[in-house]
Image 1 (tube, one colour):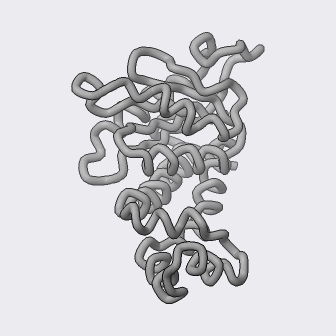
Image 2 (cartoon, rainbow, N blue to C red):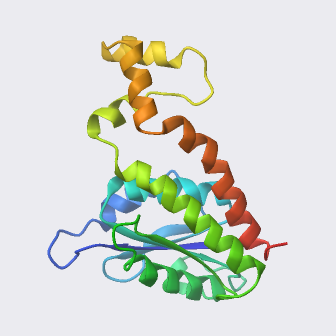
Length: 206
């Protein structure tokens, strides 16, 4: 299982953004639903590594969130709410979100396996964190103008750049340059690698 603990940055001086976060993450599949856990923090329990990648990148694009990913077991039977759940994955997510607050100029995320700092699962978690941080760097660096283009592109679909150019009233070359600057193609190629590393960590590095 994957537990995501997401903490609002600067919550003492800004409005409560948790309701907006819950709306943002609502389309992401969960085992236990996205909910406010305490104060300026939200949690969700996920089963699929690809969903974790999607959730993390949505948070980074939104900005102002520290994202902790904990990997490990969750005690069963599962309750209805993550606030009532327990298990090593929750402990790992707590460690991760606290570490995410100390990443400095890097993307504010961290990944922790429940076996701590030793073992194959921890190694896979560390590698997944590195890949997600690299993806996050590109996501954080994109402008609103680039996002207007990227949101219309479909990975692996021929003719999509021409269609987007026609929709926005710009040239296909402008679309191509925006995708290249934003490393859009590279992001979609690497998302699956991040998901595989997360799944590997979830499997104990086996």
